[in-house]
Length: 281
Image (cartoon, rainbow, N blue to C red; front, top):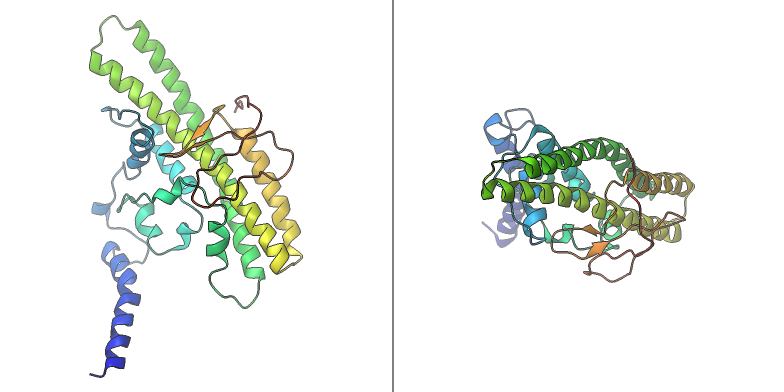
């Protein structure tokens, strides 16, 4: 076998490797995961990561139905939009890998734009369409997440009152309850942090597109981005500062135009502004 043919063979193996992995996880129909690989707590690691990487303890209590749903709904709002378009996002979505990339909590406003434009397209309209779709997906997911988040945090307030009133409780009960309440709040905070980061990334990508390839679609994307920013502020349930695992903090300024962040790659996102009051759902 010639060296050229050998090289082609290696490239073919690499190209088909993701499909083989997915095929091994499927039940014959592409996109359907074998039941044995999926568990109820496939995104439980979201809460664990939020706690441990912020120096908080992890509760020994099992997740309630709402706490489990909170983590499931948090995941797509934490995972960067550009990662959801890659082959391994299928595995992540079902919790098979429990894969957490550190760049998910370290802000780089240019990352989204770089990935967006890394694939050549025949028409630049494709880029505008992708940004528009990503923004629309976030706008769809936000209400559902915060509806559950409000319910979880309310149950935690009741848990705290019950704990204080309990005549007999062990020290472990107190520690586990406090840990779970902190864990739940940190998951919500992480999502709020991520949403602010996303608006800044979308804004940067749109600005780049309007310079490199101005098209009429820019106005529609701009309108959708403004609506997303207003939605994030309206559904904000924790006053902040927002925290991502191992990251700095983010506070959301009152919306009066594009959200602005420092243009420093690899640094924690820090959007500073006036103190916010919690939104009432």
